Length: 350
Image 1 (cartoon, one colour):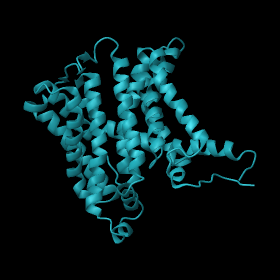
Image 2: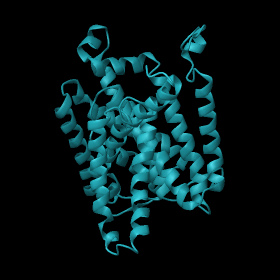
Image 3: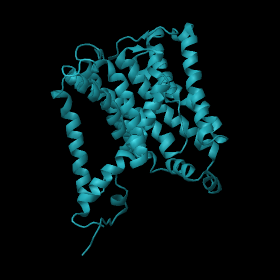
Image 4: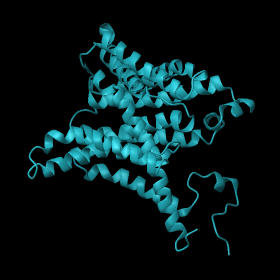
């Protein structure tokens, strides 16, 4: 009797979904995503769009931190580069939104590559401080470069149009849902296939042991800078989508707290995991919404709880990170894998 999953061809072995149940789950998820916007109200569509943008940014960060092992605390700054680049191109130069997004991605990738140069000499805490410096430098430039960014004043982005259709008119959440879903799907597929390629394997080798990777012929400088650039490309995509979706760009959206939030997404979801990035983005985006809903439902019983919600959110946020680091360092992806393994092996315990 055969026990396990066996493949008789290279195509089957290299498939993204190797078993029938995996294909069924994927089909169910796709069906849900396609049907969801036709039944959801504006509130849930807004949450879905926020999750989609967070998925893009979390995947970009996980490429750098989870797969390449290069810690980064500059996520908020790179998001700001993408958002301000797209917003300024649309506002000052009248560039159509569909062109501002790829330009913003390339500009952010270039900026990320520049700040990735110190990664050749710096590791661990020292690299984290260097990326934190990148966050502060970018934020300082945004606030003080009034002639370009407008300083502390919010940048108002014009409505995005595609083939003459105004995406921000009418039910804008519904319109943007499809754009953001396409961006998240593209980022997910790219990331999955990236680590099936030579470049992705070089990233993983650097994470596991950079000296051994260099001995095997991996150019550390090239691949570390490339990891920063690829990661920043998708972070810039998330920033550009935020600018056009929200229509208002302000430096307050891209502080160090934003960097910590995205870092929490990949820690809670699972470092070095594509699905973990998605789970973490969903969890961290929905957590404040659930706490706000809970606060409103309890306001009749505890009148003063509404004023405590922000502090409760911060406390729960920190507590969740600590619990995952202590109890399940591999995150939600590992928990979901354990659940699947349990049902796959049941009734056996091994």
